Image (cartoon, rainbow, N blue to C red; front, side, top):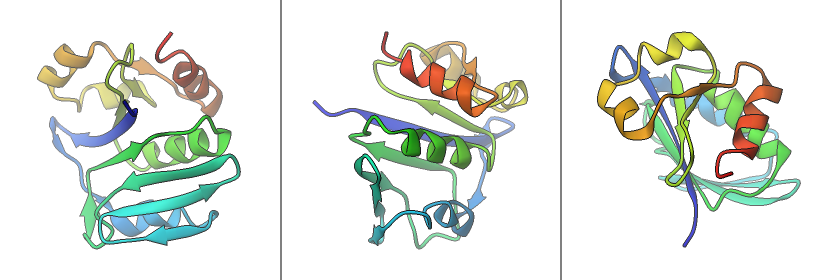
Length: 136
């Protein structure tokens, strides 16, 4: 069974739309193969697929399938989450992750009840530490 990581952006418990070009521009550092609904990135530690509607004007969520242990991927996720009120979560993970306390007020109550109280990774280092312990 493969692992999936989800990122969703919210604004006052509703979807927060982030310009797609803003997200895609974060991928420019890496070789990329792009289709209508996914992007394959070649990171220094391996390849990763990110499902995102690349033709949409804006997006509110994306999915990373079969994530790899990669500092480059962790940094990329942190940078994506910095573009909006994103929450990171994974089935089987111990907790969702947000980058700052203000994001909490935007999350739907039923999501927090289902996933648990989010932990705050307000620096790249704190975010990485939370990711490392996600399944511990």
